[in-house]
Image 1 (cartoon, rainbow, N blue to C red):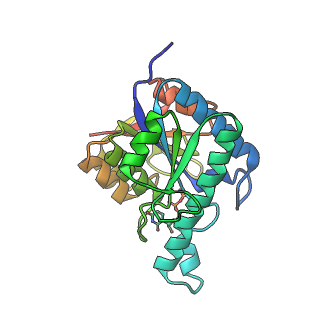
Image 2 (cartoon, rainbow, N blue to C red):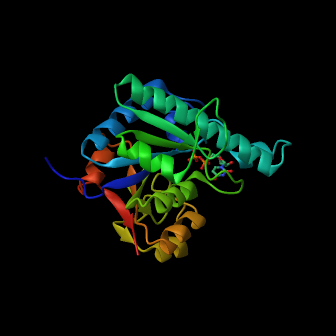
Length: 238
Ligand code: UDP
């Protein structure tokens, strides 16, 4: 059987994607498909941690324009990511695989607190680890969380799932002349101001020498393909 090129990865899954064609909430068929693809990717022999976003439920910036403070709005967003993790954990376990949600916040009735030690332990046990609660701090994003956690747990790459097949010079859905990059350095990604990930995430990845692979989750079994080094994504690396 083909060997994965990365032994341990952090996959960043946006909350927005979990909504499927809806603008809010969780689309069950989409969730089930992603759960199945995560299990297939893990079966290749990789250790998989997933940072899940919360944009399908709450984004801090949006609610803070409606009368709550930005830190409170961001806290609501971070709690939304935990809800998505719990839904994904259930979807993975329904398919007979083992998953475990860890949260950046103490919430013992809900799930265990994120620590590096707990993450190492559950990955070694063969579980897919779902990391909720973002960084635990307002003003950050789950993209930055993915890079931070990857650096903390010694992952070899961050796999950033998006709706497009890589990094483009402009939004390819709006601008047909947008150029797609096969490869970029972290510094080029920052200088280009490409919207696919925030600058903080790219800067931390540069600092920690972490490659980020931006790929389309709409392609069937894209995560497995990327893990086998055959995927069609943009590699952002030093
Ligand atoms: N968030 C935060 N700190 C973090 C991670 C996330 O405050 O470390 C909040 C922020 O309000 C954000 C929301 O959680 O809008 C959901 O995360 P994100 O927008 O990254 O989710 P995605 O766009 O991937 O669904």
